[in-house]
Image 1 (spheres, rainbow, N blue to C red):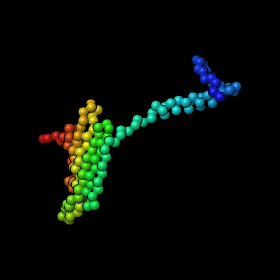
Image 2 (cartoon, rainbow, N blue to C red):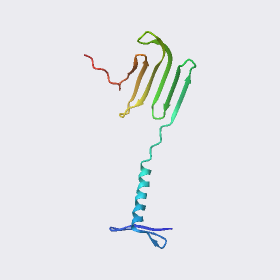
Image 3 (cartoon, rainbow, N blue to C red):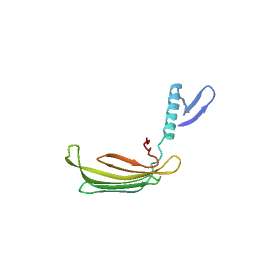
Image 4 (cartoon, rainbow, N blue to C red):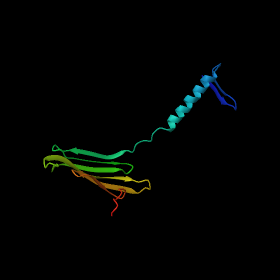
Length: 135
C-alpha cells in the first residue's frame, strides 16, 4: 500500500508498507510516471463532428458527394462520365469532376476553392490559389 512519496534536495523517498524501495526502482517509477503524464498531455484533440454527408453512385459511372463539418469545412463534388479522344483519336471514357471546398484560413476568413478535372488535367481557382504571372 502506498504510504509516502516525498522529495528533498538530495533524494527521493518512496515507501510501500514497511519496505523501502531501492534507488533503481525509484528512478524507473519516476520515469514511468513522467511518461504517463506526457502521454496524457499529448493526447490528440477530438476530430470535428460531421454535420452532413451524402454520396450517390450512378450505374453509368457518375457520382456526387458532399459533406460539412462543425468547424466550417465543406466539400461538394460531382463526377460524370464523358467520352473523349486520345492522342491517336481513339475514343475512351473519362470522368469529368467538378466541385468546390470551403475551409477557414488561419486568419479566420472562409476560403473557397472551385475546381474541375477532365482530360486536360486538374484546374482550380480561388483566392488562396496562386495566379500565374502574366508576361
